[in-house]
Amino acid sequence: MTWRTVVEWLVLGAIWGASFLFARVAVPEFGAVPLVGVRLVVAALALSVPLLMGGHARLIRERWRVLLLVGALNSAIPFSLFAWSLRSLSAGEASVLNATAALFAGLIAAVVLGEHLSRRRTLGLVIGFVGVVLLVWHKLSFSGNLLALGAGLAAAFLYGAASHIITRKLPGVAPVAVSGGSLAFASLLILPLALASAPAAVPSLKAWGAALLLGVLCTAAGYLMYFRLVKSIGPTRAITVTYAIPAFGILWGHLFLNEPVSMLMLLGGAVIVVGTAMVKLPDRVRVSEQDAVVPAKPMMNQDARAERSV
Image 1 (cartoon, rainbow, N blue to C red):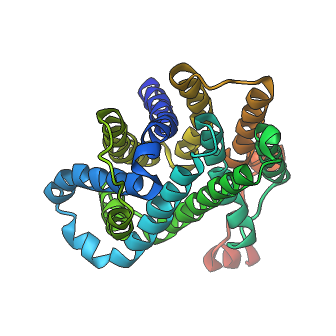
Image 2: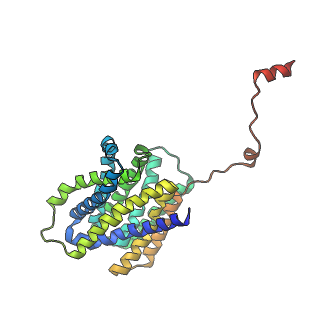
Image 3: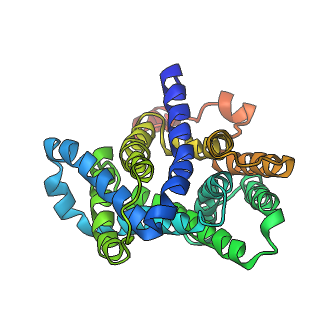
């Protein structure tokens, strides 16, 4: 990877790590579903200009079913689950749970799609979930926190499932079409529920600022940056940006929300990062010396065999 790619990877990790911070600031005044509605509508509007200027409207009409499914599984439902869970979980905890999306993607590949998982990747799955348990160990005795934990894990599972749908059903589709189209359908799905549960009081300017940052920066710009990374360095390397999200999430939560950081939380985050890296990094293919040196024997044609037999 080039230095520019490394910088983009870090910037995207910082942006997505901050999404839990913005959500925690805005969700008390908006409510979980209305906040998701604002986030998705703002993101869809922000991407509508490059979407239409790029001439992708026809493609969206042709692939609307897949984009609708991706919008539901990759945005509308998981965004709502995470927004609701942030009433009980800290920004750092939610960001670490988000990192398990790569673990679920590996599990789906092995169990549902029948792809082979090496011993290293299987061990990475186990290590990653051990990290989740370490992270929330001090909260496991409270039923409310257990529900929030389940919501975060369910959202991560949907992210993992959506990644396979995008790879298999939308190959070669431009990043702006995938992101803009799926976000447009996601906003249409969530908008009726968001309006029905709109808050009685008008949210403060602080809450509106956090919601707008969620839509423009963390969603619209974040999706474009991620799919550009997929195009430039491939999906396996690009998805490792989820490893940076827990670290940035805990950092932003500590700096701006004064959330405590314990040694057990740091240990859990580190273990999840290690486990996720073991799952997503490509396996090395070992080639023996003999296979690398000895060339295949060429086949003789009939004329050569005939001359040898004379």
